[in-house]
Length: 159
Image (tube, rainbow, N blue to C red; front, side, top):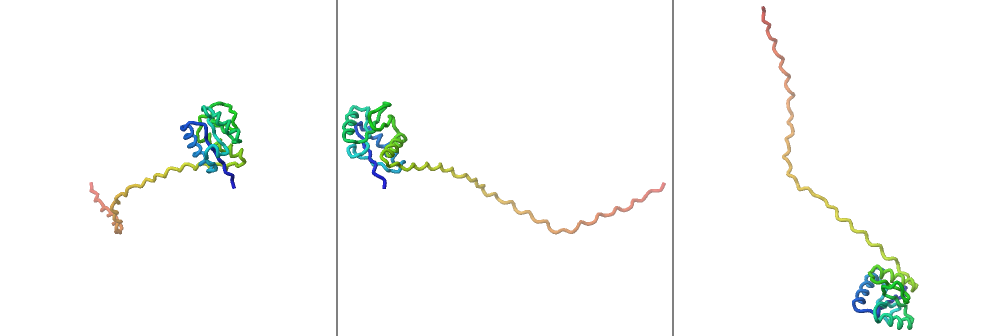
């Protein structure tokens, strides 16, 4: 049985939280749904917007309680346990969720390969029915041709 993987969000504005929540749901669906999004205080891993005014304070509080903190930031370095670079998308969030699962000792199964694009249906042209020409009558059995007449001898005139 796979252990529960929990993730929370805190220290960010509503727009960022909404966008990040959508990206997490998308990425989690692609990875088999192993992650559960919970309030920050209830989750094992918490994403904190380190670029916001309240992010560093949230990090201090969470770090003191032993939570694993993911810093959402544009900075190349952060004091958090993990880092999610801004701007983020479903792909970068998938990479983060995979790394967090491995760190938790619960590696995720590889996401299924995307299904190959369906080939477009073959276009089969069907010719319109053509009116059939009336059948030609079969040649009737004929008599063998009459032999050619032998020319009559031409009289020769005497001189």
